[in-house]
Length: 101
Image (cartoon, rainbow, N blue to C red; front, side):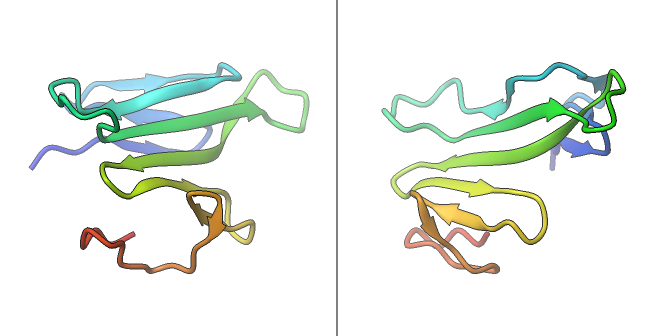
């Protein structure tokens, strides 16, 4: 199947295999179900912020995944936690709809 990936400071590979580097300090929509008629369609957002060394490089500081009918899973760098609708979530976890995070 198709996949997109994010790694490093931050590098992106899109579903069509193209590569991108985003050094901006903001949030990006990485993937979204544009055909869904739901109020809460599947969506993945990535939050980038400035790297602490003062270099013109940004790093990924968080990822949020909206799971339709379940809520929002927020993931942060190792050791800082994962949340489901604002409450702590221990990984790996099975959500009420059967999705595994």
